[in-house]
Structure formats: C-alpha cells, structure tokens
Amino acid sequence: MKGEPYIRLGFFLGLFLVMALWEAIAPRRQLTSSKPVRWFSNLALSALNSVALRTCFTLGAVGVAMESQRLGWGLFNNVAVSGWLAVVLSVVGLDLVIYLQHVMFHAVPALWRLHRVHHADPDFDVTTGVRFHTLEIALSMGIKAAAILLLGPPPLAVLIFEVLLNATSMFSHSNVRMPAWLDGMLRLVVVTPDMHRVHHSEIVEETNSNYGFNLPWWDFLLGTYRANPKEGHDHMRIGVAEIPRGRAVWLHWLLILPFVKQSRYREDNS
Image 1 (tube, one colour):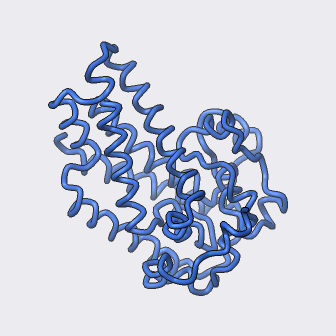
Image 2: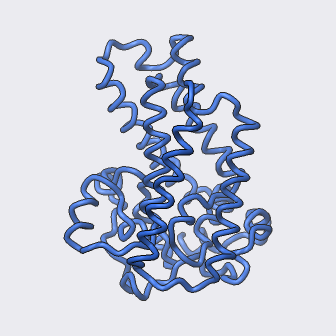
C-alpha cells in the first residue's frame, strides 16, 4: 500500500509526542531510574527492531494482506462480507490473535525469556510500549502474517490494526494521570494505563492478568482481568523481581537478557 510506512511513522511520532507531553505535565508515578538512559535504550531497541523488520520482512503486514488478497487466500477473500464489516471484523479478529499471542509468551518458558525484556523495565512510561526484544518482534510478525493469511483481511484493515496496535501500546504504557471516572469509562472500550500497569507488577499473579493491548474485552471474557494491583498504583513495584533493576536500563543488557540465566517466573507460577 503506497505511503503505508509514512502513515505509520506519522501516527507514531504524533502520539509519542502527545503522550510524552502528557507524562511531563501530569505523571501518574515518580520514575525510579535515569530517564535519559532508559529512553535511549528503549527507543534505540525500537529503532533496531524497525530496521530488522524492514530488512527481513520486506512485505510487512499490509503487504502480506495484499498478497493474500491477490491469491484469494483467507476467510474474507472467500466469504461475501461487506467492505466495512470485513474491516471491523478483521481488526477485532487480529486483536484477539495478539491477546492469545501475549498469553502464550507468558505461558511458554522459551518465549517468556524473550518477553521478559519488555517486563524488566523498572519504570512504566510511553517508551515501555515500544520496548521488545528483536527476536520477539520477529516471532510476532510471523504469527501476525500467519493470521493474516488465514483470515484474509482487507489491506486497509491491517493498516488500521497496525496503527491502532502501535498507538494503544504507547497509550496503555504511558505514565499519565487521569480522573478515575474517565479511566473507568475508557477501559470499557480500550486498555488504559492504569489497567495495563497491573500487568507490569513484580507479583506473578498480577503479571498474569490484563494481557490486552487494544481491546479490554478478551480479559473480561476470558477471566484474566484484574482491576487494581494489590499494593495500589502508587506503591506497586514494576519489573521482574529477579532481574537487577540497574542492568535493565542498558541497551546491551536488553539484547542479551533472553540468553542469561532462566527466570524463576514459571517456577513461581506453577
């Protein structure tokens, strides 16, 4: 789709600036680590991931959808569904896939090794939303491509989903304060920062909750929703307990973290 990278980049930069400004004006929690170091590492990792994806997956998610449409593969390329209904159903269906993928990355020890790079961030702000290990991003792209080939969504639906996934990840990870009544209303239709922050708790039972990125409905329906952390948002500890907080802010450590000593996460969770 012509201009797709620029559309995604434009939305990314625009929302990043908005959320960063909101965090500066009305922060939810006081940060515990050096912000310049964390931001450099998290954003550098995100940039590395973007280059790796563009190099290794030249089609991209939208390109896979276009190829699927050309070949007539997938559900919506073989079932008569009106255009906008197919777009809406595709976005919702892809969101369910991402929810299930997220659960899987917590449940499978080898995948948790990759995903704990995201959870090891000792603070929780807009840059946490783009902090993922390169191998996790590559696996996620493979899962997403398989889902697109099976579902056959319109390319427009995939573009909308990609923009929403990136935008809501930054929003739901932001260190922003909002009135409780507004948070309560918003989390009926979108994952809010207070809802997702619970997922980044050091307490395993809380880490195993609130998996949603875009839509909160899967957590409500599948029993993984938790309203608030046990210690409250102001006092909860964020991160992975056994990973040194001082190391978890450096780029080189984030890259090698999946290959160091196995986390005790699965043992504690059994």
